[in-house]
Image 1: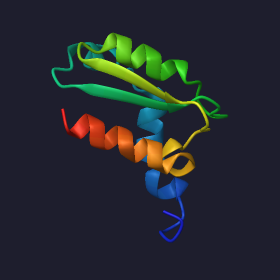
Image 2: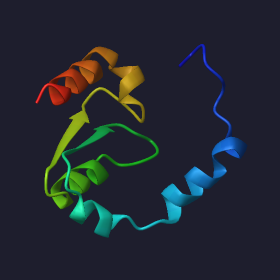
Image 3: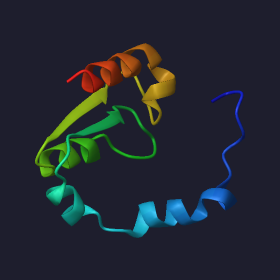
Length: 91
């Protein structure tokens, strides 16, 4: 990620707007696939309780909160994040 292109608000404006304005609660409640909600405990952008709610709302939901992360656990705790992905993929 560090060597990749910089984040561009202009390139992602539609996605960001949808993320901020859309109400996906009914979709989550009807999801017929496993859902793993991931969050960092110390995110300055989004409280980790959203992941707890999301996991509880999904029929096959689970939550994992990274205790030593802010908003980007995959960068802040990469080994633990990757281990979680391997575990989930192996089920």
